[in-house]
Length: 301
Image 1 (cartoon, rainbow, N blue to C red):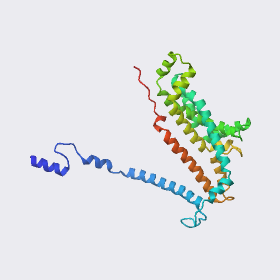
Image 2 (image 1 turned 180 degrees about the horizontal axis):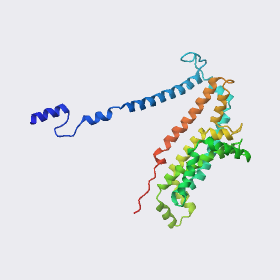
Image 3 (image 1 turned 90 degrees about the vertical axis):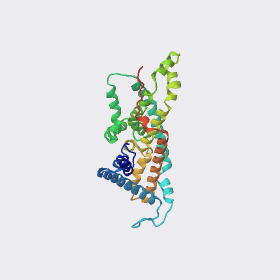
Image 4 (image 1 turned 90 degrees about the horizontal axis):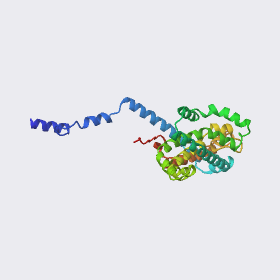
């Protein structure tokens, strides 16, 4: 009997009396037809995305590219022409100024509002959260047109102030929803202890809460910066000739592709894409996405 048991153990690859070994692993590793279809769709998407981005990148360096796999030659002159023709120094400066103003104002308005929502319970709190979610979930064009009409009526649109005010509509709720989980992770007893020791409201905010909320403030600021640089609809509806951001200037350059060389337009697209990639890398370097949805609350004793 023991000999039969030993031979069976050798054939199955596991000790006698032990749990089944390889069958469960083989079942997990075996791909189903549905999984193959999903991976094929994902692979097809990324191949097409790489092809589009690669063609624009190659075109921005090509001298001539017609009916061949690669351009006849490569050059960097299109980047210089795009820099001068489209006035990219002014456009990038306006983009950075508008984005910085939106970030500062959004944090100044959104952080105190997030503190109130995180610390206070009041009737209609869920409705307030839903109201803040609407500008983020809705397409910007749906509320951008009436918003631009109001800004034009009061003389803000067509200038940098109109671009900043329009971008504050989705940015402030974004800061509120980003900051609320960070504030909820701070123990309220820390604030109570500081007040018992004589600290006023200003001292509690500046010396107690502010150092603890630096990761949340940094996360919301960087994410709002990325969102503002890439926001097209609201900026397009409210920008004037001297207040165009990079994404709007790219749209106008593509509309005039028949007038200007396509390679210079592609060079501008590469500059915009590179700028967005840098911002995204910085955002992922300093922002932990799990912190944006974590709501850790200490259980009462």
